[in-house]
Structure formats: C-alpha cells, structure tokens
Image (cartoon, rainbow over all chains, first blue to last red; front, side, top):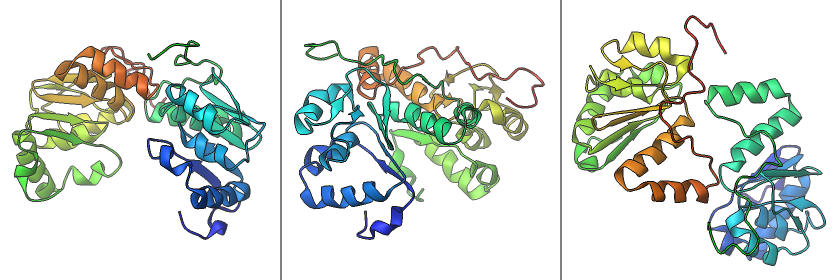
Length: 151
Length: 151
C-alpha cells in the first residue's frame, strides 16, 4: 500500500483477510490510509477478516456486512457499529461487498462481476476455472449455530 | 525453479498450469529440469495444464491423468502416451496427482491431504476456508461432451 491515495480513485479496492488482520486492525496509520482509499474507490470488496479492517475505518457503520464465521465473535467485538450478518455467503450494501471466509471471496467476486457486468460473464469465468459457483449470497453452509463452541 | 534438484528431494512438487504452459511445454531445458525434480519428489501434484509439463517429462506415460477439460484436445495431442481421463475432477496414479481446471486443484489438494494424513484433517481445512469440498474425484461437472465446440 502506498501513500498515493489517487492510485485507486474510481477503481476497485480489494481488502484481503488473514491472521495479520488481528494486529493490523489496531494500526491507526493503516486504518486511516485504508479509509482514504476506500472513500475514493468506486467499489470496495473484502474477503474473510478483511472486513474488520474496513469496519475499523467507520465507513460501514450502520451498514450490513459479513466475515469469516469462525472469527465472527472477534469481528463483532472489534467493530460493534456494523450490522454483521450471521448467515450470509457474502453481503452487498451500498458500494461495499463483504465475503465470509476465504473461498466465499470467489463466490462474492463472481457475484460482483454479475452485478457490474452481466451474469453470463460471471458464469463464463466460473466455467473457465471449473468452479461450481455458489451464486446465492443468502445460502451459507458455514453459518455458525449460536453458542456453538467450534465446528 | 533453480538448478538445485536436491531442493525437493523427498518433498512435494506442485506444478501449476496457466497459459504459460503453451510455451513452456516445448522448453526442453525446463522439461528436463522438471523431470529431475519430479523423479526425486515424494509426491507430484499438477493443477490445470500443469499436467502437460509433467506429461512432457515422460514420467506419466502409460499412467492415468487429467487436465483442464477446455484444454484437453491440446493436452492429448501434446502428450499422447498418457492415459488422459475425460471425466475426472482429479486423478491419482502412482505418486502423481493431476487436477482438472484451476479450482479442481483445491479439491485435489484436500483429497491428497485426506490420503496422506486423514480425512478429518482435510475436512477441518475445508471448513476453515469455508470451502464446499467436492470430495469425489470421479464426479466432474465440467467434463466435456465429445465434439462439443465450447461451453
């Protein structure tokens, strides 16, 4: 990530997740930089716990979003003003797309392409990479049962 | 790839695919280097058209293998001594695992983990990345109908 916020003006910003987000979520310099880039980007997509980094910018306060279901307790505690969705493969609200865990990002990316381009394009890409696209963002086979201690 | 073939002795060798394989398949220096590494590796896995690079080494002549179904005509013409499987998500023969197109590599990798470790480990990894594992290597939703011109 560079200091040149104009790099992403009018473009797509993709925020990945991973264990690094546990520390990065509390890096105020990074969060401020991300906030500027996210405000300028035309579309903002997050995968897995990348949603926490976006959540920390305050830009999705009051909006619906999701994240990896195994990390959802930490996600909710870290960004309590976001309307976190317990059951969602991915969520679109305003210009923000947030995917659940890791490979949910593939389904979200195809959904984003279907929204921004057309469904045939998304389906052609999925076939090209021999991917069985889970195209319904509301169907979430990994949603956690309340009070479940682990999978 | 370095010249130090001992790098992979006793280890896993993963050969990725992609458009670059169209040229690399006829790079005799690379194919010879790959042959040495593949012979020494304990396990050899290929994804998509990476199977052609392995096929060009001659090491899977007479063995069963698969590759991206959209590229299968080129794959068969380039390595005619391999028993290419038209319908397979992935194929294991001897120490060689070959996956069909792109994301079939995820299913194969989990199948490899199930074979070498145990099924619970593979399932735990799939859940951790919220991946609906297509765990049957014989079920291939992208198998091409004979003489089909394209999808």
